[in-house]
Length: 243
Image (spheres, rainbow, N blue to C red):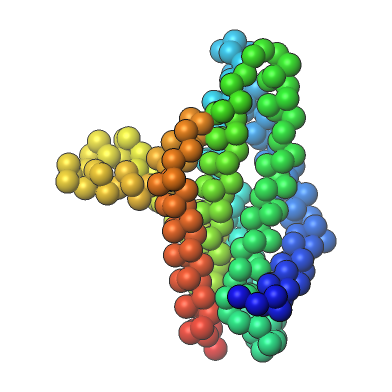
């Protein structure tokens, strides 16, 4: 991968990232994330009486479940509907460069959003002794989970011209990928399928990392999941199925 290749991705990445902040979408997303997350967390925090972020990290996957498809639904669907995708893909760029630029712009946007929630652990630390391990693990797990949601949502967005359809399908796909390894789902599954379903579920790997125990198998799983859906996204773009 040469320097020019990376520079092209960076140029596209900056354009995509700025497009968030040039519209109300970014501020609505960040506002909803912070208000809903803080309210749900502090609603029970003082009742429990423990200086712990476990409740917050238990909420994050479900908040991201709705907000991640909202971020990705426009990335391809809007370009296909407006016709600007034809212009984009006639530029001297590869399909991988276009896909990676969109993915990393949405991932950095999500990282910025998570960063703005740093007031939570600071507040909790003032109120009592906290274990930094689960907090670091929780934020790292949230970033990996968010990346997985975004890669899946980006793929779904490439399948349609309608942003609402992209949002709904992205929500359903992310929900299915998250709960497939959940205990209540595994309870009704055939015994032989339980290990496979638990491994495939996004949620089981997130909760492993959120405990503060960072295992290479969980990291490799998330990287593989993200790569798979980015690769599928590139295949869709290469097919030019909307023409």
